[in-house]
Image (cartoon, rainbow, N blue to C red; front, side):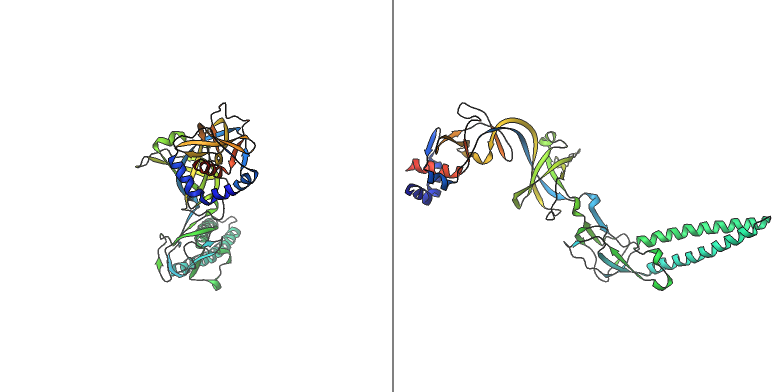
Length: 371
């Protein structure tokens, strides 16, 4: 116990010194007491045959597809009277985006109501001419004229009705008593406000974008692959990714589409779909992804068991109770969670390997050698 306490108090400096002086290590063995083993937090596991994927790391961003980007406009233009929008705000379907005022909206409503009255009158005339048509050639002609007039007004009424709906006005509820010079522009989806290009009192034309919204219900990952890696990437391949500023949490998805044209920088875009989306996902966030390229069935161990020293990979194998030997391994393939290695006489699926407490074992071994 005293020996262990002495080790933990000087581990940081002595271990670094020992690693710096060490040139080759092979067959190094350390034996622990039960208490030392407990304090080191050692956990053991045995190698298993697993499907190990070769991986390719790509960087990119969370993005919204074009169909999820909404440009907000005023159908006939006008003056901005109110808007509650702020960049980054989350809004829901039906929320008010802006109130726009212009005489054009009054004129449109007036034209619709006038046309509707004319249509009612034309229908009455059509009915009257239908009654008078019996055996009278002139009445037949008048009836045809009346019928044509009704059809023309029906077309005009329908067109004006659709224009009103584009402006957010319900033609079924419109009457001479509720004519308004204002229209309300409302959100068509749950979305985030990407940008706002309007302010109170500003006049905007029908072609001007008042704000841009992003429907974040279906974000995707847009990754950049360079020319030498393009042939390795196929549609349907799985990938794991994390936010660049939050590497501790990973998410999964699959490659949906690989670009077919090289950019000026000799790269293509790889479009990835996500398995699950979280409310914390926001367009524009930088991500790092590992794409699984090819599966091989290999003897493997948890990645946490392997450490690098003098640019060579090693593990700690249990040789007897509480006795551990440091062995160099030959790595064949590395995945996110596991490392595939070549079998040997000293390392097989019957071996017991430390997968936790590895750094403690390493420090104790070299601390002991130095002393």
